[in-house]
Amino acid sequence: MYCCAQTLAYLGTRQGRASRSFVPKVEKLARRSALPSGIQNDKGRYRARVTYKGKRTHIGSFHTIADARAALDIARSEIARGVFVPPAERKRQERELRQLEEHNALTIADLAESWLESYERAGRSKATIVTHRSALNAHVLPVLGDIFLTQLTADMIQTMLDNIGEPIPRRNAARTLQTMLNFAVKTKAGGLAASPFQYELPRPKNTRGRIDREKIATPEEIAALTAAMPQELALGVPLAAWCALRLGEVMGLERGDFEHLDQDSGTTMRVERQVNVKAGAITHPKAESYRTIAVPSFMVPMIRNHLNSHVSPEPSAPLFPGSGIGGRLSQSAFDRAWREARDKVKPGFRFHDLRHSGLTHFARAGATLAELMLRGGHTDVSVALRYQTATAERDRELTERMENMLTANES
Image 1 (spheres, rainbow, N blue to C red):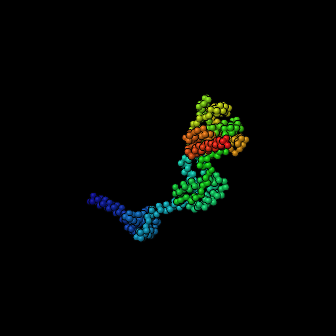
Image 2: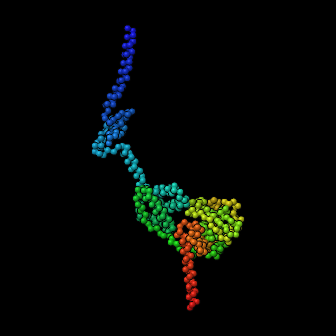
Image 3: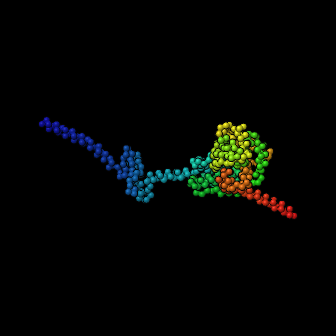
């Protein structure tokens, strides 16, 4: 009897536990079944989903059943009319539209920054970037900077460039703007399909290879220009003329660049660097024109004397020491001395014309095109051809003089 009572109590207890655990499940199922099809309760919010193209597509979570049901009705109506766009796809389209609007809202100033940044990433020289930025800041951006790229017209460009008085700054600004707009078209920046640049760039003089004969100094004039310079700077003149160096290359020379100075002949000089004023640094020679060239024997005593009198003994010691870039004399200080000397001998003659003079004399001595390119550090054949053209002109002039002499003798 006692055992039966225990058994009944145990069974009753078990049945009570089962019934109590079953009630919440029934209530939960009842709540679920009470929600409309396509709506699910998720932690107090109501998720609405619809079947679209055979897949269950989430269309949103809502605070109330009424909102979820309304969204569901709208989605089903759009599916029926064939205009439904899933929310994920709609967000993607909206994101692309915003990006497109931002892309098309690019101003000339915005384009300038992205273009110059692309030059930096591509490893373009600092001097090139400085040149373009200078043209932009001085001429382009003050006039066109706030204009949207898609609004830029050829007339705007024409007016901006025409208002630049000097031809060289105008040409520089035109080239910078043209290159930048070509970049925009290539990269599809700002929605620009075609460049509005139609300005005809003025051609600089002598682009087809004629050297102005007035800018060719004779050997006697080069010697006079050398003598007119301060003693510590005089070597720069024959180096520019007879070794065909650019001013930056002259200022970049160091003691160790000269080899075989102990010989009366066979002395050579390495051109490995230049003072780049625009970049504010010592850089590679222009167009990577590293070269080793022969030094005329008549210059060797002058080089020895200069090294012994004005240059420190270290191989890396600058040939023209000073307080400028890399412990070198500044180009402005050298240029002041040059102008004073030049005005005494050949007013208006540029320092760079010494290089032209030396290469012209080198061509007259019989140098081939390849030899001219090597000595001058040229990479463009057409540039080296100028010196051969100047030599041919001189040959024709002398031939005409000879003919006139012969004709005069016959008469």
